[in-house]
Length: 475
View (cartoon, rainbow, N blue to C red):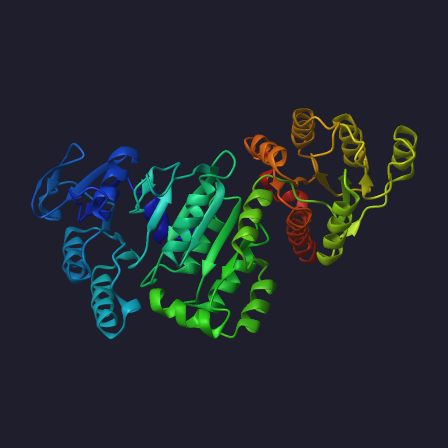
């Protein structure tokens, strides 16, 4: 495991240098976070001294007599070099610099960052940043995100670790996860900004070997060492899924990236091939990334690519079937005994092949019969539970309970699509309380299963039995 990041997450004492008495200022927020959530010792430093959040404000790190394992520098860029020098003299080896105003702003910032690099080498420091949010771990009580809780909600502990070059992207995604289902999603969050020291490869190695991390989300704009990163990704992707966004896909995106993290562009076609070869599931939209979290974070891996679709609307079933083809999946052919039972159970005007179309005459019990049949069929690897709840005799609360009963089995990937207005919204909210994957369209539900299946194909290609890879079935 990467010692550099391990030293931060295992720290027993943290110092906030630049703690502010002004509400909502970064130094105030970070100080508040540590005072209220960090189980170890917290030290706050402000040249004016005084008191903050019920704790003493030290005028400098040299006033603190105890050993300090890690520090977060929240000072203006022009003071950062001196603060870093003082930290080095104090013997603090692990530093997070959240402050911006370095290589991302141009020549002046580049020179400032070079000065800091010299200090880092002089004192053999491990540094995250500058220009970053730093670290967040709800389980460990570490939170250097300088955005107040009234603006940025924090998710609870869960199976997902995230590392990101862009602090804004990371903050927005963290905020969204805090509102997704139970909100129990995040193991470790690493925002490394300009990557003056700790970078994407260090982050990947750490979370890849973290036993609490079951899946990894990344946001990259460039690579500090692309070869090393890809080698590490190939190793880790055979143990747990890696997915995320590699930005700078276009010339326009490259210019935008350079303006806030000093990122450099690269040939996107080559990057795409490299990511695929390393087993990284590349996504290009926010919704797709959230869908990854929802399905990989809650479902077991399928053993194959055969999909069963149960619906109460023929058109919706056709749309789902089209996406099955688009995702290189197959519509399952039901085994003879299952097909016979479906034919004998349902009225003749129901379509009992695959997709199973329960039509506008469906009641909730029809869904139970069809879903259980699909679940018990060895020819079915994954199931799409598709419902348009506006039909007259379908009781939405009964449908919700049936869906919950099936979802609890966790033997096969099982996703739901609820399409429509008030009842669809209500059903989605009720199911998501239990982190049951629900999507607003047939295509997104199938696509989520497609991503799971793509990962299984990658594992099998490299001789890995997907049953040996622990996924979201325990959530």
